[in-house]
Length: 77
Image 1 (cartoon, rainbow, N blue to C red):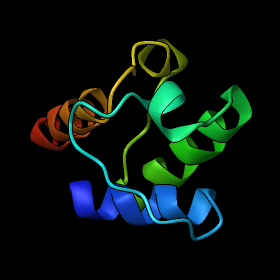
Image 2: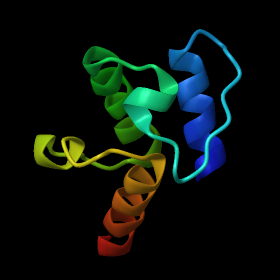
Image 3: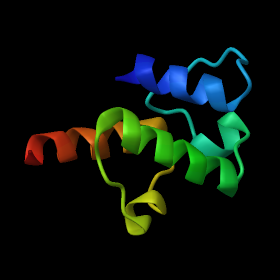
Image 4: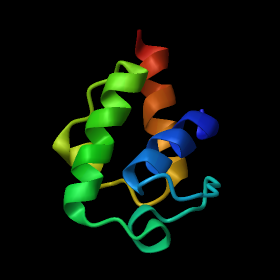
């Protein structure tokens, strides 16, 4: 999953090489702003076929938070 997230984030950063771990802080470490985050969430929803409510987005601090959310949604199916 982290590989796919890396691809998605790389696209948002204009092809710039990114290295992600579960501890990567989305805003600070990746240099994304709030608009970038919304666009990123939309792409994640499309890629993983999940719906991410606004309340969940506000809780995303690290890449690990995103992964745990996606995994919990996949488990619910």
